[in-house]
Image (cartoon, rainbow, N blue to C red):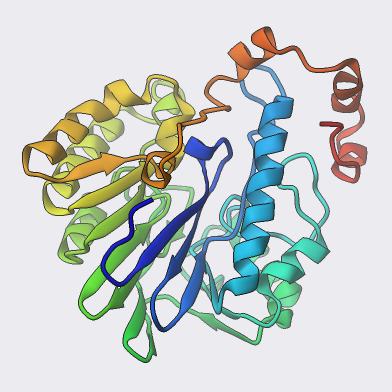
Length: 328
């Protein structure tokens, strides 16, 4: 893994690491930050539940998250989807979560979170309200971060105004982008902007003039199903502009839920290379291989059939399974 001049960036949990997440640890000489400490698995893909290998990756990523949360001074919440924050309920099926795990992540920390009172859809408003009334109370300091900046000696953590979760006016709501700056070196974290799909978000990304941008790509696996292919095309056009202007782009998340993601991303990768920049996945940035478990779930089941014990666990009632960790 290579570091920037002053800022250390460590991918913690991403699709390229086998799970749904964009959790990232960032460290400057002044402050240690854990961005979006959540992780999930897709409950049903190709009419199949997660494979045991996905649960092993989930367990591993959660353990790494807890390890880095212990070091962190600040934990952020860009929005209230469960792959971006950890809830205070027990769910070993989808989130590997519990009240104890959530407390270990947020307790005693400075928590900068998106407001649940404005620019938010109904489901996230409820989740945000619950977060603030449960584990949020364990934080040393909990503040709405929308459109605000916070200074820690020579480091500034700056949050954008809420931007669309994908296309303009998306029913999925809004997210906060985060810029971490130390002595004019900047890293931009842009979760779930899906490309960015919205032109206004693309303008904001380029204006940051960051050394690195960590961007959630578009959900190409939903094209023709839930997402208009024209929106995917627009997202990739905007990514081309980012690629030309940002030296290092970590591209991950939704786009890697499709095994043919590289085919879609290659023009942007080539565009970056043409001007001496580069686009990599989180795993590639960390110097490891991409492990796209969700995209390859069907093939995993065929190549490595789960044990009978695991199959029996998957047939348990959902609420019961949530309380019992899978036999992996």
